[in-house]
Length: 359
Image 1 (tube, one colour):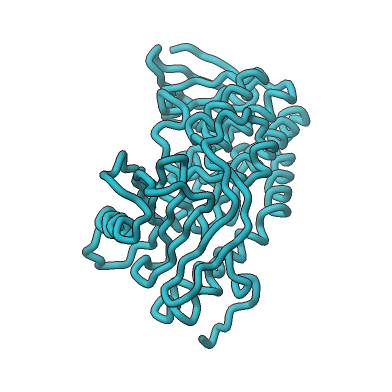
Image 2: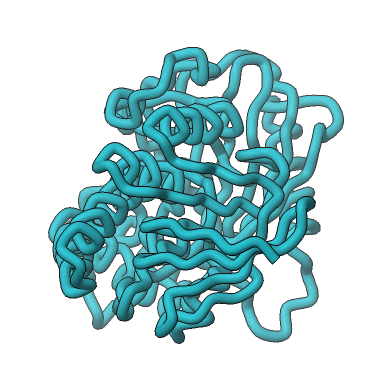
């Protein structure tokens, strides 16, 4: 078995992992990234919208853009459509992720695909990796878990996010082009929403819905019913092209650093508990994780990692905490949908006021 060493070992090459790798490598550290998939960003499990500022912050070429987005329209039964100015882009998510990995490699990170971290020992700073070439023992000083909502790294160190929401998506042909994203709030979509995000002549349509105990209707059945509704409304046509599913963190973790291990992106619950948006936070927090990991290695003291916890929470905690509180309120009062829904969606001013707990 081959023995190797690095300063920072990163598990996962999504937006958080790639951004962490780029930041740490630019600081002159030896970085290995282990990505279990053979191709970065595949399969796509994302509605593929990013806010406009992220394209510049991520520093990727505009060839990842599929189309511009002017805003968002929110549909609520019995209410006028709510129009929100929200400039952004629909991107080809696989190419977006691949561009971030290319930047990390250019900075000097060693990104290894089809490579799994079988186990690691935080006390010894040692991990066992497997790939087509065999097994490798890697010694590291800091490990960053950027391995998604079901983070094996988080599970190993006892930082597990149990607040996860399932989501599923289809690709459908649009009847006519759209310049806005479309969001559908409905009593039948329990504590979640449906979406129609245009991408040229096509659209991603999907559902994120909290599962209820003893429900007999599957998420796929709900999605197909939502698809039929959009067909009847004249928004989409034809047969579905591709089906994907995944999990969305619905609460931030209470801690994202333990000894010499850090979590970033979905693994840390740095995803908006109401909208499910997570790419911006993943890129931002991933870069922070890489920066603070580098500082810890350079100072030869893992106490530096506490700076990561402080920095990302200074930037994101208020937003995520408010959203988590709204989610708890929404789930508890869903039977009063008409009365509470505007307090539970970001497009309405009621979302930013204190909810009436006596509703």
